[in-house]
Structures are given as structure tokens and as C-alpha cells.
Length: 156
Image (cartoon, rainbow, N blue to C red; front, side, top):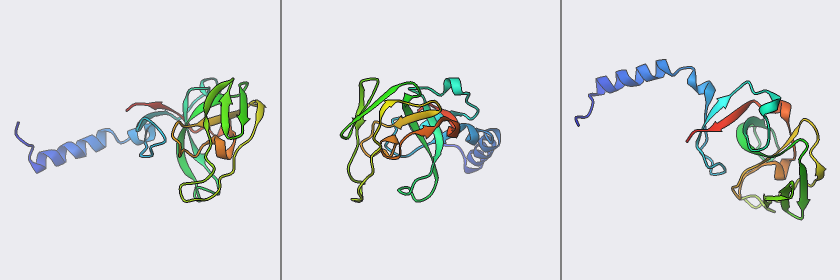
């Protein structure tokens, strides 16, 4: 197959950009290894009834450790009404093991740990990622459901 000319390739790219202009609001691309998927389709107008355990959510993370606020995607591992249990550094939702927290960051800073035993209150969610270095609710605690900016559906 013959390679396209630079002019036809350029026209193709310009057309693609013009046609897909609204897409960036509906797509999130992540390069962090804390998520298995890299591309997510976004529902930017989620209703509270679909913000539940097992869904991925996009929100802005504000913490001292991250220095600047940034948009992140995490999975809801435990939702309002679920039972969250923390034993030492081990986290469980409804008796099902989620994972263990680290004691130090990659650069050696000591991490604070969220400790909780009980039913997750209304309007709160516990976020988690399978990756050992994920910065999630194990360290910063519950997130408010009202702060969910989008439901993120894994695409690739």
C-alpha cells in the first residue's frame, strides 16, 4: 500500500480535528499505571443513582501531597451504605478485601492513612485503584458524591 502524501495526510488530520472538536469534553486519557484502561468516555452529567460501587469517576483532587489540584479517575470501591473496615493497613468493603496501604510515598515521605470502621455515610464514596502506588481514599479518605464531575467508562 502506498503511503499518503504529506498534503493528503495533513488534510485528513485537519478534517479529523474539525469533526472531533467536541470530543475532548467526552474523553479522558490517562498515562498513569494506576488504572488498567488508558482511554475513558465521560458522562459529564451523572445522576446520583448511577454513582455507585464499581463505577469509575472523574474528579478534581486537592491534597497537600499532590501540590496542585488535578483531575483524576478512580474506581468507587465502597459507596454510601456499604460497610468499610480498616485493619492495620488493610481495607475491606462489605468484608471483601480491597487492598493494603503503603507506609511511604515513592520519594520516601511518610503517608497518612484513612482509618474508618462502619457504614459509609450518605453522600460519601471510598475510591480505590488496584495499583500499589495509587493515591486514593486509603490516604485522603472519603470523597463527596457532589464532587464527582463525570462517570468514566473504560474504552481502551
